[in-house]
Length: 639
Image 1: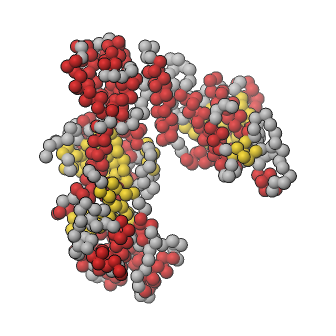
Image 2 (image 1 turned 180 degrees about the horizontal axis):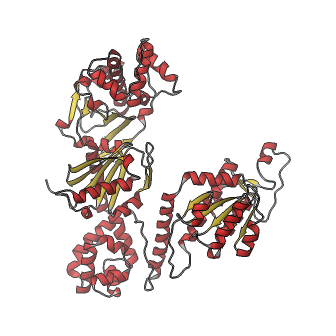
Image 3 (image 1 turned 30 degrees about the horizontal axis):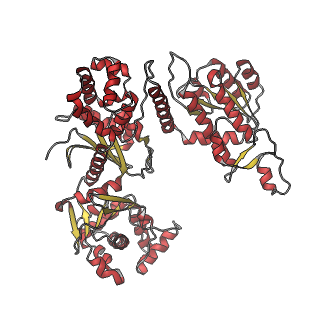
């Protein structure tokens, strides 16, 4: 089997352990390690720890060669931001790719990865339970019991498979006999809605055990799922044996339901952390008999095979397959074709242009981020030669060249910071400014602290008066905030002159809120304002840099970490970021004040409250405040 161009990092992240491996050949995994999540502050720390271990391991590849990675994580994955539901880790996929220095980072749900592994499992990596024969190609179903109940499926396409992302574990549990009715009644004492996941999981085993003890008038010990399972396998506790028997029966019902729902003639596969460990006990269990007990459809499901997944690294295989499919897709896109176009065009390039081509092919990631002067110096050519090289490939200039290259390397335009240079064209200048702003916004999004935002909104809602303080170029942010909150009918003011700021802060009252806006968080004038506000009993919300004196001393700190070019000292991106934080606060206040619509006072008008309006409505908003304006109006920075 041929080796991959470079080793790939594959990971399976759960709530307790993070498993890592390297894939140097397709489907072959080495240097497998399992790290406790609790031993690492965040996902990046865990990956870094694994890679550091590789650096010191014998016969391990150079970690600098790793260009692509796939992460299967026990969490729904929607968009760029990943927040684990069963652990505190969270991260931006694009930011993590950049921090790890990867060309490609694919993050998928772990059960989706397991589903994509099914067509790639060999005969010795599964064990068939009962009869039936798979009809291929056809739909395949997947169940997995662990901390919850995962349900998925695979639909065949012309050249591959599509994995179904479902929440089928939350379908209603339907009892089959009196014993199961008793279990349902017991579960109802704890849960108003009893799904299959409530029973077909680790916590579900414990619930079944307690319910059967109640049903049999027996004494239930304080046993966890592993203890119940082990006692059942050892045949040393009749109640545990019955618990495992019921568990397997219910799993047979859930599997049959999935089979008829999907028309899974390709078979039903059982994975997860519980069933594969039961071994032959599961083969002898009532699982298959219950699976075929489907009334008028018993013959239908009897022909569908059921399998237990015994492969040790099935999730790795699925994540690898998804990564490979992603890379194949990228190769068909214009950006990936650009590298091939460069290779094909080398014979037609001038000697100087050829040096640029060789540099780009050898260092595509650097070429993507470096300014034109750096590229020219690295290739030992002039800057006009770099532009001619780009135009030879059909690009308008370096900026257009980088955008096409980026789509091939990452699948999306990468989030980077590009230095604006004096010899940039207007197109390059515009692309860099917009790209740098987008990058900074994504970074701030990944740093948002939900608790701090909620606390700030609460303070603003209950403030007697809100005052905004800023200096220099950030004064427009304070004025924008004043405009927004005045339109809510909330007493507000903005102060941008140091002398007026001192005077205003010294007349604040307890319960008032001072919002101090500063990029550095170190200006003595604004620190003096904060001290005066605190002395008067007012609260201080700081929109500023992390680890700054202002952030440390404020009641609530909303962190915006962005370094402006100190050579020019003209704030650009940071001012936009501060405006966006004001928008977040304004929207939060508006939604809390009136979930049905935003309270805005139209500029230049005062609409008296109608006598016909209900008293509750007029009392919930300030006089003259309209309830009809759409939320979208809040996002405009100027009228």
